Length: 365
Image: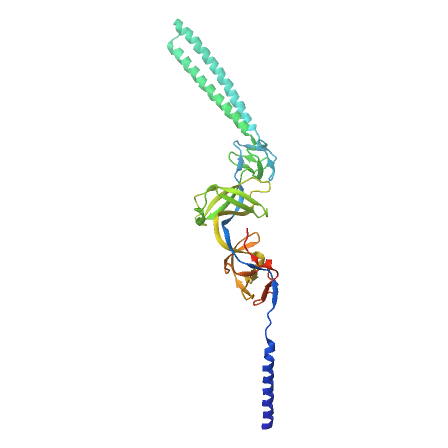
């Protein structure tokens, strides 16, 4: 039994000796990857305040009637372009025509009464001069004439008002624009002050935003602002701040600011976008978007040290523009980064530049 135990111990020693001899052969060989490398530099970055907003028309008109009556004509529809002076709505003039007829009859009667009163004044004036009529009779004739003159003036004013009401039965477009809402239909009853159509002019457009209270003191009238519309990719619309409303929303603590933008056939009220206002510049670092690596929804980058080893580092990123992104934390000036990481790149890999010109800078115009 003791003989078998001795043989087993000798076998174990031989196995351990063999393991010690093979250990040097398991040395880890790091992968070597030819990649494009760039050196990070700090540059002047614009201090930009970006805020979402909406295009609105500065000429939005609710067209209403000044007279009561049934709508006789209403041919325009939503989306239809109209020119200034185009007849849009016509109210049935039956009531106003009747008022005009009555006013004309009143004017005729008042003129007849005035002529009769003036005749009496002339007659009693002559008789009074001859002593054939008393002064009281002449006085009453003069009073009647003056009253007839006042009645005629009131009748003529009533006729003018009725004729003006008749003119209000035809409603033209006050501006060049587009019908955006049709509130009534042909045959509906129009009442004074009730909107019939809503028209928006495209000649004066605004981009309306609501800025945070902390930014309000930095804004000034006529300050330039760049507007980018989501529906118009690649297009930058240059405008200026036209209005700053100094009363904010007590709930959101935001203040209404309007940026005047030039008219553009492609620009329509209701479009969403962002306004960017440049206040100055600050020193910062940017990297190409293609250099960042996402892991679990977080952003990072591979930094290459002086030993040419790649090490992954988490970053805090800021604004993006033209293929670059601002780094707010995690990277310093002078460090080297992998510009175009590959799927084969891992922590600790040996990185060599593919060419001398590849070790460039990440500065951006």
